[in-house]
Structure formats: structure tokens, C-alpha cells
Length: 400
Image (cartoon, rainbow, N blue to C red):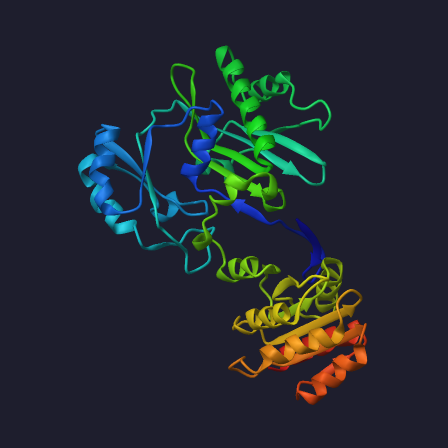
């Protein structure tokens, strides 16, 4: 997790590296922890539909596109259709890109669909366990309006889970009563809340959400939809979860950077940033914002980087057509400035388009690095001042 100050007003933005799970993956984990889910089958090709429908043995089926975004129902990604119409609906969705209010304009690829038996619910609730960085603890949230109604409904009730004592049973019951439940439903809801917290702690999850949590007329609860996000800093403890990552659902640049060992997060600006050290990267972005510019990314090549990794990082930025200029900000402590220069020269010849580069080199073998850039014809804007480098980068972006 990386926190940084960014944008014109220097508001705090939290950038968390997470592994997002598909609904069917999240539901399998819920079921393993004792939370009821509807009968369902995942299909990845049209030829699997008939067998799936026969297995479900229902007159109607819920067809759900599996993408890492919400509001699928508003975009036609969730439909209840007759059993004999499932195949045609699957054919219409599979292999397409679904655009919802929560995706980019080009949407996300639909490579799998979850076919489920419909659930007759008397009410839809909301339940989630979220890691609150400000509180330094997990927080349990509950609301009496689930589904798409959560966005327009009242603010959910919440209980902070004490990091020492852990979840206490009364908290689940108190939440149940706070959202209007009574009788046996209070205890049932409390059991689900306890299971949700245990799951979040077991998985190192930053979010485990059931929305909607469907209440049946017999008092039971069923998870109608589920979302789980895992802190990727904890994946060394969760090797099985790493295999659930769907690279096609993420930003291609993020996935390429991750594969190359780069700490990269895409933003919405036009000034590419290549920096060594997370703190220096955040300071660089702050100064760009103060100078009136917008960073296009957070990119930390690390203290022990190599010339090849620097070249790969610069090439990654150059392929982003939004980037109008690259600001390279290096403090040569562990890493040598001449090594950075070597990496920049390796990549610059293959850009395929004119791309101004502003370089701030300070530290170990600084003079040699500057000389290497000059000899390689890449001297351009080189300065020892970070403030001046940020101002130059903003000017280049605004004039291009």
C-alpha cells in the first residue's frame, strides 16, 4: 500500500495494490467459511451451457458476467432468463467487453459467466468487512438496503473491530438490531458477520463484501453477490490466492510493470514519472501538482535497480500515449547515476515518437551520469533542483 498527496488541492489519495477476485471465486471462499451461496456453475465457453443448466435444474437462471467491476446489472451483465434462453444470452456476452459505470470507456473482457439458481428474497441487506487505514483496524459495515440500493440508501451502520480483542459476538448482534432485524434473524446475521471477519483476517483481505445479503422467508441468509480484495503485500502468506489473479481484468501497464518487478500505478495525468524510492516519488508528484501539472503515474524503480530495469520502466512510460514528457528524478544513494543514464540511453532510441525527458540526477557518480547522457545525445533538460525539474516538466507538457 502506498499513500500519496496528489492533485491540484493536494488531497490524500491512497493507492493500494490489491488482488481482486471474481464473484464466483469470492463465493467459493464464503462457502468454505460456512456462508450460504446460491447453487451455481461457471462457464467459459458456449458448449458448457447445456450441462450447466441441467445441473442447476431450474426453470430460470441468473446469468452473470464475471468482471472486476460493479454495476453489472445496469449494463446488462446480470440477467434472469428462461433456461432455454441461457445459451443465446451466454453467446451474446462471452468474448465481449462489458462497459459499466465503474469501468473505463472500453470496458472489461467477459471471459467467464456465472450461472446461478434464482433466490427468492424477502429483503436485501448489505454486509462488509473493510480494512480502515485511518482507524488502524477492520470495520464491520451493515445496511438494511442491499444491491444497487446501497448507493442511494442510508449510511451503513458500523463497528470497529478491536485489533487486540478481535471480533466480539455482540458486535454482529448489535449491527443486526441497528439495521432493523429481530428474532432469530439477529443471531443468524451475527453468525454470518463473525464468519465474514474470520475470512477477512484469514485472507489478509482489505475488503470482503456481500451485496446483497439476501434474507429468505424462513430466516436464512444467502450471499447474492460477493467481492473480495486481497492486500498484495500479503501474498507471500497467501500463495494460493496469487493463482486467482486475472491479469486480463487489470490495466495492461500495471500487469507488465508487476511482471518486471516495477512498482507502478497508472494515474490520469500527462507527465510520466520515473523515480527511485517511494518517498521521493511522492514528493515528485506533489511538486508536479504544485507547478500546475498532473502526474501520469507512480513509478518506483527501487534502490537496487539495474540499467535494464530503468530501460524497461522508461519504455513502459513512452508507450503510454497520454504521456507528453517524462520526469526522471534520481537520488543516487544505493543506485549510481551513471547506471541510470545507461538505462535511459538504452530505452530512448526505441521510443518511436518524440518524447521530451527532464532529468534530475543527484548523488553517486552524478558527473559520470551527466557525461554519459551528453555523449549519448540525451542531455536535454538536466538539473540538480527537483523544483526546477518539476517546473520544466510541466512547461514541456503544456507546450506540447
